Image (cartoon, rainbow, N blue to C red; front, side, top):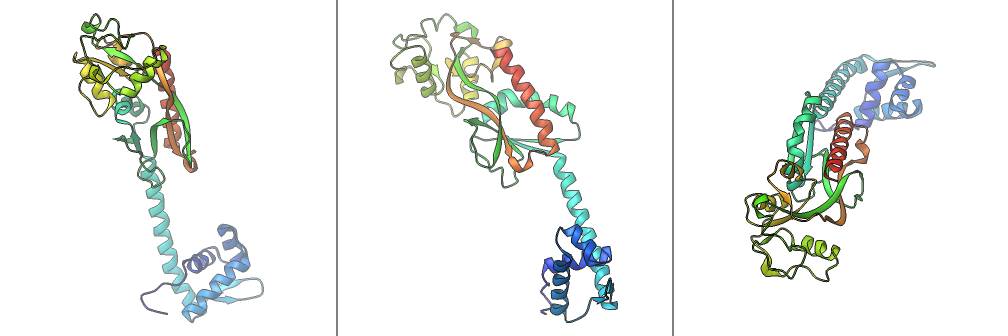
Length: 300
């Protein structure tokens, strides 16, 4: 065989198990195969190397001197590999990588993560905020919080709370937004936020159309920026009464109108179906569903 090559890894694995466990039958039990299959792979390895590794007897096998030398190195190599895999698993179980939408992550999740860390101090949490969908199958992230209808191939999705939006403004602008529920009335302050949400909100109130374009103020790239502008008194924004409940509770914002609309979507916790029993995912799932339930109840 070429000096730079290796025999079949399947054959090496069969040989290592047989050498360590003292026979083909116990190796087969460990490898979830048959003794005949283990014997076949070992024989293939012997043919490739051009040496006998086992002396075969009627009811047992013994390592040859060459086999014993190779077994020592194989066992050492596989022991190192097993230790490496164990360290990798341990490291992965102490690191939780979350990806979430910017507005939810900034306004709702980040202020609460301290409570999760207090419950799981040995778990290092990493939070990525991006409007783009991250690939959970690639291993870069453990879980995602997404907005949609909860159907993503290969992922388990747990509902957190509905996607709601309602007009929000600074308390000092409450008088300036009177008549907001009539899209024909020109307010003294501009509208902020997504025009399609305003359209849905007005249609939900029974109007045929939404606000005209010239009623809008500055356009921002994310909902939490619209809300920041509303807190500063730059207009009335349309946003989630759940995500921004703290601003409402602490008096930085008031609901400019009691009605809340929805586009039919919701926020979901999503994670690979194959990892549903992962300890860190189970811990985060239990924690965040409780937090989401409490937020929905307070904002309802």
